[in-house]
Image (tube, rainbow, N blue to C red; front, side):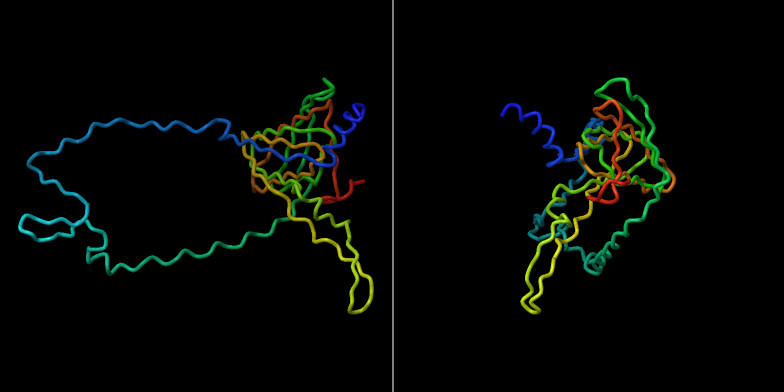
Length: 241
């Protein structure tokens, strides 16, 4: 049994990939301290009458006043209520990004067997293919630009299109095959300068640059001597030849 533990340790990431973790730059820096200036309270003149905005009170002559009570000012009665805000517009359809504006340059490779670093650059309105890093885990640091990191949902295996379910149709007495519904859309995370992300092994993901004029530059560190990139035909698809 003890001899199977190393094998189980290698197979578990393939069968059950871990979740993607995001560390935002604002969370790392912590909230900025707000400077509060101490001011001395203003002195109230003894001869100046004090007024309050509290509820209705009575004068010494027994007459009641409603000064300061909300809703008692006649000027407020003629003001119509503001119209409700318009409904938000529907989200735009995701654009089709070209693949030509992507480069992955080696920074530190083959210096050690357990660590390497590379620089990923994605041009504006471009995106990488859907890919995973094989057995390698990766930590991403966003240097510049704002990008969208799309990852395969954790429950994608439940919507595998290859698992077909056969059923009998009583109307025409024919056997037909009904496939499961298509997988849900990928989960997206927005990363800006200073943000970190952890991508587990075998996790399918894609980097998109939706900006119109700014490059996205990431530093990617992997736990291997050289980076492994496995491009796929689509989400949950086969490896590209």
